[in-house]
Length: 457
Picture 1 (tube, rainbow, N blue to C red):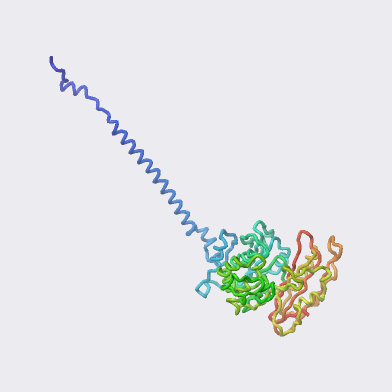
Picture 2: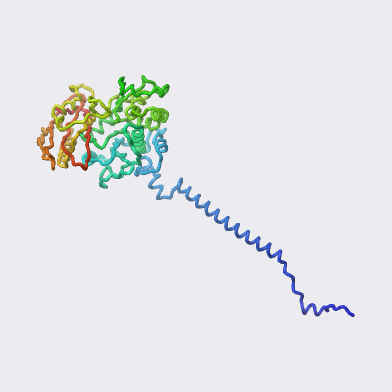
């Protein structure tokens, strides 16, 4: 029997079907899938890296619009926006930077920073607005309110947009010092600010802006009260745990309200060593706002300080708070005693108090507030070069207070001239009744000694 083999022509006509290699096909498919997934992952990684690079580039090298608004020279030397996300440590670090180069790359006009430490509204804002009017290039305003409070002023007001990022403040605690340093730091970011005045919502100006500006800018010293009080309210608050960094003989006390130049402000903001000591040991009844700055300046910068405050407060009745005055206390003799700070000021005396703080137990009506503004304007906006022509200014003895049981009292005001050395001057404020919406007032009078001795007679 012959074996059955296909002939050559049969093989050519009926080709044999090749067998599929399944293992090779699966391997190739897996390889292609792996390559595809690797491509997807690589693409996503490159995309994420590019996005991250772009965001970092935007952070350090912003777009032209962002650079123009925020990193330009004008905004660097004078920040237009006070809102920022810096922590206190970051803010203090930034504010404590001092340029090595003495000369400024721009025409620097020194300004006065008016820093308002307030709980809420500014009832005397209209008077301050008139005070600032026409001098926009010579001042800057900073307001530290409670964190949840929004200052309600018009867009044309110098207070508009001048709230700084704030935190809660507690009376008698280190938080007050934190608020003061926060105000100083934000003001220091403007390189044109040369003098720094701490005020409250109860302060009003009683001299015109040029007088205040010229006196402060031309002063060689700062005005921070710093004295040695041997009583329990002074040395009695010292803690031996502060030694050896702060010794008892270095301990000083002073008013919270101050005025200082840029050099002292930078040093206060930059200090961490002594601030930390006060934060740790000056409690619970130590009142660091009355001791930290006076003690620090006494230890390191006494030659730059006049050792007197810009405020006058009556502490004669004792206690942790200043004396309160009722209607019966407001008299011509009372105002006269405040003018001279309890002494007789002659033309050769050195300047006394620049600000008077008077706490009252009554309120004031809108009518009285308008009268107060009228008095202020009459005194703030006279022509200093023609002071001898000032009239005798007398205002009505009484203004009917709206809804008040008794009329408000307007004290007469008299102006005069003294051609001699500077003298201290305090203008009497007007007292009466304010509506309940304003809350209790503690009007303080900002009075600056005239360089050529305009003296209230």
